[in-house]
Length: 73
Image (tube, rainbow, N blue to C red; front, side, top):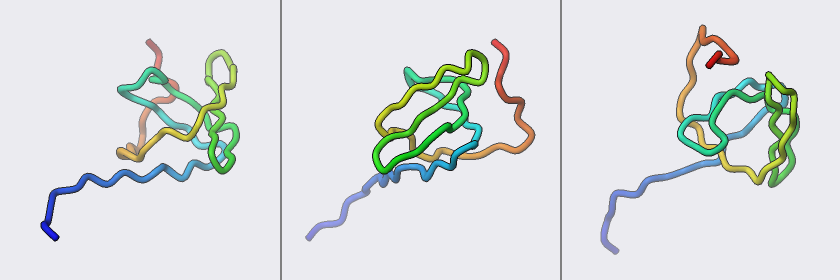
């Protein structure tokens, strides 16, 4: 068996109430985690308060302390 460079992705373990920022995706923006199930995540917009439920899709990329949230555009 030969060896290769392999990139590993793991689904992020969301927590209800968590404030997140998605970058580089069609879901880009600030969200609050409103609900979680085995295969779905419900996110709430902090401005409009609309909620959307999607298949789990996020992967951990980093955390920053002292960030403004939500961002004003």
